[in-house]
Length: 285
Image 1: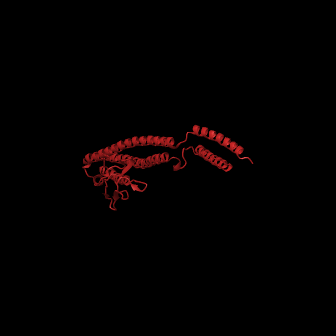
Image 2: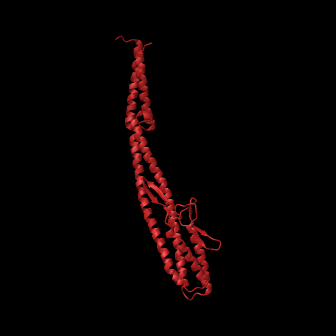
Image 3: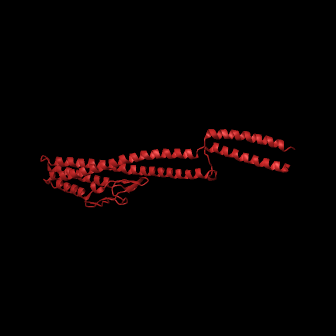
């Protein structure tokens, strides 16, 4: 086979061009810290990277959902704590009013305080978080308690569970059941108690049993909320570990071995310099 000067020149230029491509590849890996910069570099790594990124995106979304869930549960617990303090104060007044040493003026003052406590309890029931009523089930745009002009209170409870997804296939209830805490029977009882005090009624002690029942229901609902809170913390810890693992897998899949890249780059530079030197000898002026 006859080898011409043109063939030598073309082959030399092709090899030098390939050498430049390899140099560019190693330089990109060194700068970016990744094995590939485009899917065509390694389709298998690219496909795995897409799957790992999808998993990581899901974890990040679940963490945002957890933040919303914590917001609801923290505000619900604060509302229940305030409601419990109000009912405990009402109970103190009932016990105090049951004493025959109280005069008409004292009972009237207690009745007025009961009226203020009832209004405060209604305000707690209408607690809003980011413009949503957290004590009215899934009907977050409607206040559960309405105070009428004559002082009476109407309750429109929605007991549906407001669920938030915190992991794949796992949802947790964010709200409490308002029917167990802020129900019509409670506000009717407080109104009757207020009227009984203002009219100097003598049957004040009979309200204690009903009041204790409502306090017990509130405490039970708060305990159930606390149990869910503990579960959410466990889920948050698991999501945090999943995020760390997903990031590690993604780095292992796409991250370049920097020591190897530097070694390959130095080796390729030496090969390239040798190619240029040989080419200069082949192609003489």
